[in-house]
Amino acid sequence: MSPKHEARLPLAFITPGSEVRLVALGDEIDPLQREQLTAYGLAESRPIRVLQQKPMTVILADEVELALEHAVARYIWVEKDASPD
Image: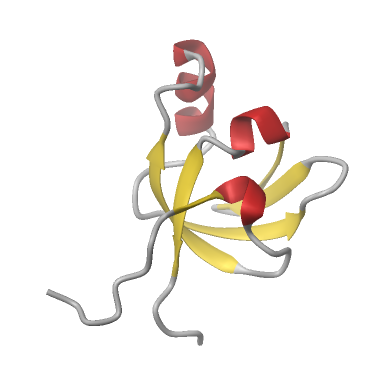
């Protein structure tokens, strides 16, 4: 019961430089691709830093840099952390 509940947002809409937390991988993502993303360290509650959005969404997750197509990034759901460092 947190008064500062943040709505979930698509990863594709997060400003570069932001740190977010993974909430879910949408069902719209191909099952094989979901498996690959999980293998690269994209797991629920995992912190993610957005490095860039154009021409592709580039993120840093567990010291692994990943480039994602916007068609995938728009179905990766994240929350902004309630308090910055």
